[in-house]
Length: 378
Image (cartoon, rainbow, N blue to C red; front, side, top):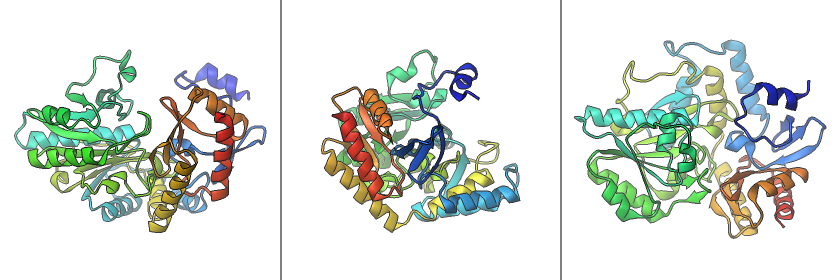
C-alpha cells in the first residue's frame, strides 16, 4: 500500500503532515518505512511519557487486554478505581472523572464549575480564561480558547467566556465580578507559544478566587504528569486548584483524560449529570496506572535537570522542565523540516520550536538531538 497516497485520498485533510511515515520505535528512537532512525523530541505531542513501547507499560496494557478490553461505566473495574485512587493520593484531590482526551477533560471541568455555581443558587456562569490560551477543539473548549485564529469558521460559539491578558492583574480583577464562576489557567501556555505564567499573577488569580468563591481551574493537559519537573505544574506555584484537567502523558500513548475534583466540588457531579462511554476504559486505565505509579521524585529530579540543560544550551528559551519553546530566526516550520532531514523530530508553537521529549529520554540522545537542532537552526 502507498500509505501517503491512501491517506491523502481517504483521511480528512486536517493535518499538515510532514513527509514521514513512522513504523516502529523504542524509547526515544523511532524509525520510518525506509529504516531511517530519528531521535524523537516530541513524544507524540507529550503523550508518550516514557517513550515508545515502554516494557512495563506494554505489560500492563497487554495483561488487561487479555482480561477485558472494555465494559460499560455502569459496572466497576479495578484499573479505573486504582488509577483514581493514585491520582487523588498524589495530588490531594478528592474525586476523578475519566474521559478520553484533553478537550473532554476540560469540558468536564467547565461543566463542573457551572454546576457548582448553579447549586449555589445560580446567576454565575462565566469563566475567565487567558489570551493565548488553548483548551481544546470542541466548540465549547474552542470558546474557552483565547486565540482568535482558532475561532475562524466555527461560530456561533458557546457563550460565557471572557479572555483577559496574562499578567494584567487589574484587568483580571475588573473581569472577576458579577457572573464569574471560575478562572481557568495553563501554567505554561503550550499552543500559545510555550509561555510560562508569572508567579505573582498566578498567586493573584488564586487570591481573587479564594476571596470571591470563584473556582480555580488548572488545565494540565500538556503540562501534567511530570512534564515540568513536578507531577503537575501548579505545584511550582504553591497553589491549590479546585479542579485540574489532564490527559496526554497520563496514558503513556493511549487516549485517556482525567478531571480531578477538589473538596469544594467533589460531590458536584451526580448520577446522570455527566458521562462517557469509553472514559476510564480498563486498558487505557491500566496503561495510565503503569505510567503514574512510576513518576516519582527521582524521575522528576531528572526531568528538571534535563530541562535545565536545554535552557543552558538555548538561554532564550521559554517554558519549564521538558516543555520548552525556542525562538528561531528562521521560520519554525523550516527548522523542523531541516531537523527531520538530519534525523530529529520536534514541534512548533507559534514562531518557536517546541520540545516535548519523553521524560525518560537518555542523556546521550537528548544531547545529540539538541546538537542537530542547533545545526538546523543555524
